[in-house]
Image (tube, rainbow, N blue to C red; front, side, top):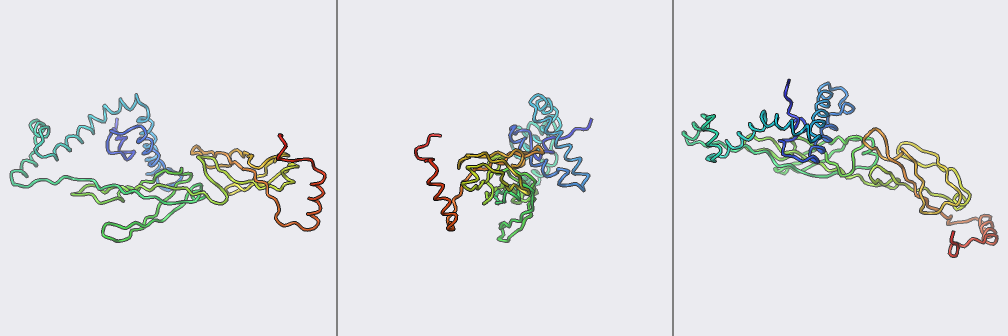
Length: 299
């Protein structure tokens, strides 16, 4: 049986991570190698299978505990041994050398040369703003960051379809440079989804306004509401009030499972500011006939 380093597959350095960190790493890798995004790459398809397999094992407490015993024997012990080797003169390193030897280190000490500690570069974090539609459909965004030498470096960031507000995209190796041959750090980009004039986002629900005339609200009507990339016709019951809502199922934001949340339309009754003479007469006639007074009416 071929051993697979599931932690490495999810982009994690070791097994000293929480369940939330495993879940976050899984989402980042799944989005990066999803077949829908990399349809022409057979490697991405195989990688995506390994990512799902890794998450299935590591997300379950029992299977992760069993896997960690194997991981420690094949990977973890080696990592710890290499780490303590770097700590020149440490007690544990000397004990290990008694059993396993370290001829390279001995030769370097004998010649007066000390090995340099390999250090991974620091991670960098930044954030970008995207519109609701850019996040809904996915998009490419360019960002420019100033490097340590003062030069500007431009990155093209692929925004995955249906990314959630506040999620981070990880660009491996695009952080600060490592030291003494160490790997570069990573660049983490936080996504801020901005509301606009048409829609506001709350989880997987989209909110919008449903503008009605006084007579539409009083008599009831069928109104057309704009959604993302579409329009829908909804029934508005008679007597609806400002502030009440109409829920349109399945027309909200992507839920990450192939579906969508709901679109919530809040009623706002709009009164015409400018009336022609005929309209004014009709309103005056209606005012004389109607006994409705919202300041005294309970219903």
